[in-house]
Picture 1 (cartoon, rainbow, N blue to C red):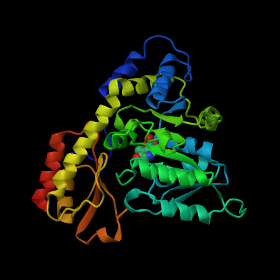
Picture 2: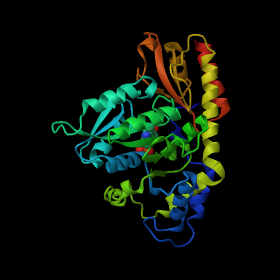
Picture 3: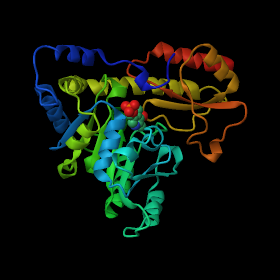
Picture 4: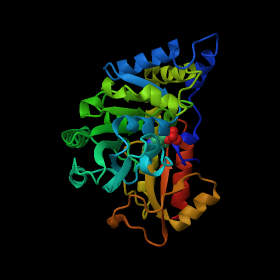
Length: 353
Ligand SMILES: *Cc1c(COP(=O)(O)O)cnc(C)c1O
């Protein structure tokens, strides 16, 4: 039973096979190869737009380098206070922007509310020399609490940002999971809602080590190739990145993988919700389940070797505050999660609650 993270799973067999197939013969290095060109075209087709696409090996590189194209060193980057960019990237966004300031905003269930953003924008007026200047808004979809911004919510937040001259970045580490849950098209969940730059996550959902940075406004991408190379994130054997993305997207494979992960998370959420005294403070809207369980059940789960994270009290509203005999845990399902693991986990919580 392992629900520690979706990147605890390996890569999809189809992606691995594509990497092996790309091994044959000679190809030009540094992304000037047919596999990379095919991946770029596939992403432009998918997003129904002529985009600037760059492949990178990690999500941290995608986020930090994308933000560096939106924010100058004296810029302010607004994000949720629990966002990966501000908590889990060891200062990479600050480093690659040459010092921009990340400003974490509070918000229930992992989401920034429009009022909160509007207040933050007012608190950093343009032209006030003693303060960093509003430059970027980074939204995580699905959020760090496993919830989603609806399309209207994305539009409203992006509208506020654009009205203040602020670019909009989406951290889509779990883009596929969010997309299949909303039933939206990739275009609808991004540029049609006002997103300027997307970190298109894929590693958590089945590639070996490949994500894409997608600029919907190509003018914003002018410096990206230099920034990526300078950061040491331009792979010489770029064909292996291209091969991963092409296989990941082909025939809707990525959507199948995400549907499976989401279905397992939904099964887990339903099973846990049916147990008296277990509480699920956040709606399960993608592939993550957040549960408040008894300490007794948690001890038994640990003894059984189950993998998951103790989430402290991160993101919990006052109404959901933990009692001393409770633990708040995060459970993530992946494309490789098996139904038996889910059922065994639920049964274990049930029998110890
Ligand atoms: C996993 C994750 C990333 C990317 O992390 P890497 O380990 O650098 O690939 C980015 N954002 C979010 C929200 C994530 O969960």
